[in-house]
Image 1: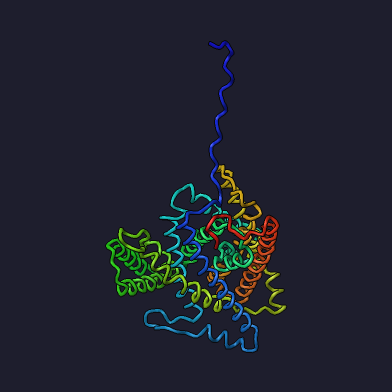
Image 2 (image 1 turned 180 degrees about the horizontal axis):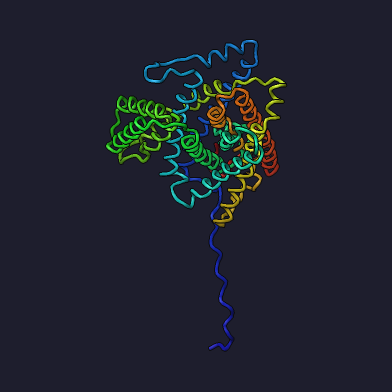
Amino acid sequence: MSLTPPGPPPAPRPAASRVLFGRLPTREARYLAHVLRDETVGGFLLLAGAVVALVWANSPWSDAYAELLHSHVGPSSIGLDLTVAHWASDGLLALFFFVAGLELKRELVVGELRTPATALLPVVAAGCGMAVPALLYVVVSLGEPGAGEGWAIPTATDIAFALTVLAVAGSSLPTALRAFLLTLAVVDDLGAITIIAIFYTEQIELGSLAGAIAALAAYAVLQRRRVRAWWVYVPLALGVWWLVHDSGVHATVAGVALGLLTRVRPDEGEASSPAQRLEHRLGPISAGLVLPIFAFAAAGVAVSGGDLRAAAEDPVAAGVAVGLVVGKFLGVLGGTWAAARWTRAQLSPDLAWSDVAAVATLAGIGFTVSLLIGDLAYGEDPTRSAAVKVAVLAASLVAAAIAVVQLRFRERHVRRRGGERADGQTGQTV
């Protein structure tokens, strides 16, 4: 028997670190590729709608543009004699938020948000990406009369616009990082609609709200009983929308609620679930029609030298711009870093924190929902509303430009390493 004293016990092996933005399952990558294509095309059309609105609003025919948006359409007997601009924000955007609700339900049931471990990163990043811009807005606009109404404007991210920039300038980014941006924006949309429902509802008609809740319950029962008749769901969904609108709650809340109540898991022998079928049919309409029309209705603002100066001198507009460009970057990047530290996760070997920083910069593109919240906050003050629109447009363009520079540097780095244009995952190029 050896008399050699035993050595120190072997050091415990470190716990395996979770990899951030690693390889996605093939099924998830295919779904993401489909969503990215729709959102990217929609982003280009959204930009086209915004450009047409800006050109028209600054042309000699600007009065015709204003007259079109303020034209009333709809039956007044049931409270739907609304302007064209109102129909775009309350009507069409309800469809956009319905699709967002479907995407969120999918993430909660089978996607990145189904378990606390995978949900932590996008939820923390989205939460910080909303809190920090709001805080910076408050700091910049402190003391300005009426500034308190607009704190939520810089909290939103426009996923279609952001993914369009990503598709043009960031083709080498891994699929998982794109999935992170998409999931973050979905959580962001839920946060935005929650803010709208809580903070931008002035008066509630309890009877209509109760009717909307009853209709939503009926929708949930029909989903549970596997009813598939479209002629039942369409009138019911329209009824939910009208009741929510009539209750005083912003009508887009109806879209998210219906999306969250739609069944996501397919039954045995069922090729696809109702959520998958609806997202497949309505996703292209939302991205290719709804968002461009809303951009056309919301982005038309005069951008003369005097208007730009007025926006630059308005503390509210300055707070919106700083919140989007600086606050979103700091919030998303800081939240991602904090979540990684908390979970002891490590970045995928194909990535650097500079890549995450580029995605955080993209989150500062706040276009669609920021314009919607700005209209809710200052729609009755034309001067401030115009200044806020200029700030949202300018900040979104600045964030996009900075992100393009960051992504272009990455593209050059990838080419230097061998000219490969892969997404870091075998068979998962997008």
